[in-house]
Structures are given as C-alpha cells and as structure tokens.
Image (cartoon, rainbow, N blue to C red; front, side, top):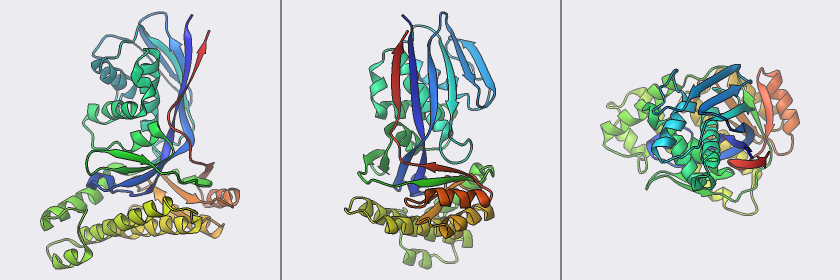
Length: 356
C-alpha cells in the first residue's frame, strides 16, 4: 500500500519591520493563501523524480549521499542533504509534482515556502515525528535554504510559512515567533513584474545601516535621532537617512503590535501605519520603484486603507489593505500595470494523506 501525500505551505507578506530583521529588530508577518503544493509518494526504487510543470522543469536523481548540487540554490537536493544529516530515515525515493500560485522572485517567499513544504513532505514520508512540529520544520528549512549555501538571511520567512497566521517575530534572545490573534480582512497583492534587486538593495541598505552603527558604536535597538544629529559629519548622507528611517520604522512596528493586540481592532489605523511604513521605505531606504509607487497610489485612490512595498525592494510586489473594496482595488492595480491577487491571511504548512 503506497501512501500518497499532499503538502502545501504559504507565501508571506511582511506587514511591519521591512529591512529590520537583519538588524535584530522585530517584524510582523502574515502567511497568505498563495501556496506551494507538493503531491506524490514513495517511488519503487531509490530515485527522486520531481516534476515542476508550472516552470517547465523536471529533475531525477538517485539517493547517494551527499547529493551533489547541479545548479545554484539546488533546494530539492540541499533539503535532502540537511535532513539526512539530521537523521532522516527515508526508505526509498519519491515521485512528486510541485505546483504553486506564489509569484516567483517577487518578495513573497516562494523559495522559502517551497523548502518548508519539501521538508515537511520528506519528514512525513519517512514517518519522522518532526513532521508535526512547525518550529522544527522551519529550522530545517532555514538550514536547507540559507545555511547550506552560506547566504545571509534569517528565519522570518520560514517561521511565517511553517506557522501561518499573523506572527510577531522577535530576534533579541533567539528567534521567538508569537502568534497575534488579530482578524484581518482582505489584502490585494500587486506584482509589478519588475525583477527584485535583492543583492543591490541589501548591499546599500544593510551595509549602510550596519556601517553607520559601527561608526557610532550603538545598536539600533536604543538609537535615537538626537544621537544621529551628534554624529553628523561622520556619517554619510545616505547612512544618516537610512538610520533615521530605521528608527521611525522601529517605532511603527511597536505601535502596530500594540494595535493588533487591542480590541476592537482599528482597521483604518492599521492601514495608516502600513502607509507610514511605506513612506520610510520609499523616501528613507529608497527601495520602492516608480511603478510600485503608481500601483500604491492607484490602490489608495480606489479605496485601500493603506499600502506598502513587500520584500527587499527594487521591484517585486506591493500589497494594499482593502477589507471593503478588494475587487475595485485589484482592478486599479491592474490598470496601473501590475498583476493583482486578492488574498487573505492563511494557515501554515498542512498535509493531507491518502492511501492507495
């Protein structure tokens, strides 16, 4: 009796704290109902066969560890290597079909959702008890996507995808996700179809912030704007602008957490905070684009309560909070040149097992 399994994991949007996690500041994320889905079961041999019809890719290889990587960010193999080193006891190969509705290279964490779903699938097929623990799935997925390739990056995306819902994630004493009980209405995700410039943005924004903090000998957790004034002349104009924006966004996230823990929930104030965050991302960090700005303006004119860019920036997606006028906002974003998706907050990784 071969067991067939379906595992899916969501993409995510970053509500508050964009470009703050790598400074050790908290973020607020929301899993969304655009997902990566993996369907399949054990094969009759030791081969892994992976069909990805959405992107026109197919791969097949035998399970001889350590698996050799055949391309950059070879996530299917890196996940198997990481899990095997962590004690995975898979009894044979697997045949799977991978499909998804998350826009690729858009800041909505399609790669993290893929690795979370693949990790959970393999753990479940091996009968591993870690398959029911989203925290352990997130940690293994982070190891497979980030640590295995020695890339910069935290666990925000993996926690958001594995746990689902709205998460407040603090990084001060180790990564600590906390589910927020807020009930949010509809969002509209707008894909600009402009490729992100993740490396270029991080090189400028992350390095600028970290270098400025080293000059001052301070951490971002307690830095004030008055202290930045005292170092004027030692900081570059870009460093000063970036750090001021980070301080303001730090405060916005603190206000947002309090708001999202208060009943009755103020949807209009939530939208206002999103837009205030966008002002700093656009004017302070300089990560927005002219097209995304036009999409945001169109969404607001159509009735959205707030909107911001999503992800590292330089392209990718924006989203608007539109609990009352989602379809109208989606049409406005499309007229401004984006691909629009009406989305809602969704659950984390989930599995459906079928015996054949």
